[in-house]
Image (cartoon, rainbow, N blue to C red; front, side):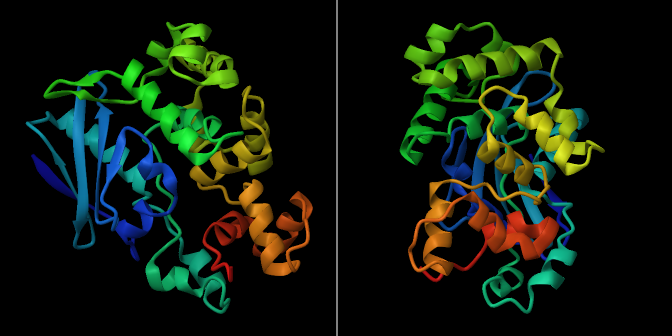
Amino acid sequence: MEWTLPARQPFSLPAVVRSHGWIRLAPFSGEEDGTAFGYITRVETGEVVAMHITAAPGGVRVTVDGDLDAAGQDDISHQVRWMLGLDQDLSEFYDAVRAEPGLAHIVERAQGRILRSPTLFEDTVKTILTTNTAWSGTIRMTERLVDRLGDPLPSAPSHRAFPTPEHLATTDEDTLRRDVGLGYRAPYILALARAVASGALDLEAYKTSPLATPDLRRALLSIKGVGDYAAANLLMLLGRYDWVPVDSWALKMVSQEWHDGQPVGRAEVEAAFEPWGRWKGLAYWFWNWKS
């Protein structure tokens, strides 16, 4: 079955799909040009479903194999709206950047939305898996986590959904560390899964949290394995752009852009984008780097 979902304009599906590397992490799959992507998901009944998303006039078209009841279709629609930020209003950001040569392309290309997973739990796990490793390591760890512990798609068992907190909570540190290959991250992922599964931590509530961004940042930093970079990355995924996710790449790019290749630190990166205020994370993310 298939249906369409509208998006607040301007909207570009390729711009969202190519916004960062998430499209390369299981259980995502995507076209190189960003015109379509697939994702193996789970609806509230526990059923594992393969969705396929393509561009449609004014929004996107959602296709799933077989039929879903009304509740299942609503669940998938809710997931897709969040994943693609279909309801996000970026008009204020667009107005702010039109006159900036380093950012004017954002408006022309309808950029600004960042691809997300359906749950903040999945995005938190994936963000932790980006720390202290090459991108190839993140891809490999995520793939193993899904392959070893995700629920299979009934029509194609080799395709699996991202593991639930409940399932991860029943594993042990040794399995995650050695069999899945998470290394030192294993106890962090296990503790996170158990906190979410037990109800001690409601990550999904952060999506609509009334907390001011500094308070929400402190809440994210209280999660073991989440440091300054990871917290800033998660804030970006939550639509809070007050912090820049400073990593080695950010340091390199800011050094080359404004400091003649001389070494810089977090303070210089933050200062470079401070003029953009609550939009500085997005300004950094989509900056048209000279190098």
